[in-house]
Length: 101
Image (tube, rainbow, N blue to C red; front, side, top):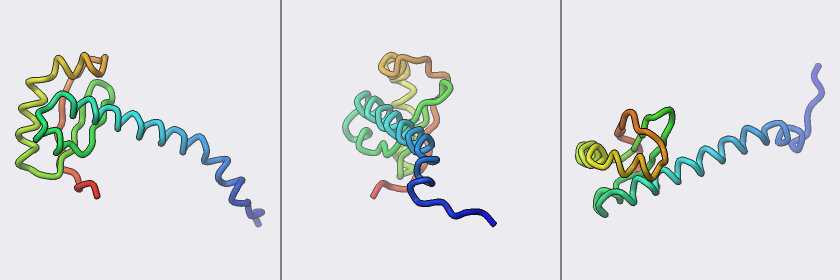
C-alpha cells in the first residue's frame, strides 16, 4: 500500500509543470496583444486567442464571419507581425474557438 502524500508534497511536484503552463499562458497573451495591435479595431476585438509555435501563428475567433476577414487581414500584415514577434511566420491559421466569458 502506498503512503498518502500531503497536499503540499503534491503541489511541490507539480510546481514546475504549473510554472511552465503559466509561462505559456503569458506568452500566448503577449502574442494576442501583438496581433491585436496590428489589426483594425473592429477585427482586433474579435481576436480571442493567439499563439506562435514553430513558425505558425494561430489565431482564435468565435465567429466564422470574422475568421474569413482575419485570414485576409493577417496575410496582408504578415511582415509587420513577423517584425513585432521577432520571428519568421511560416503559416497563419485562424480557428473558431469558444467565446471568452
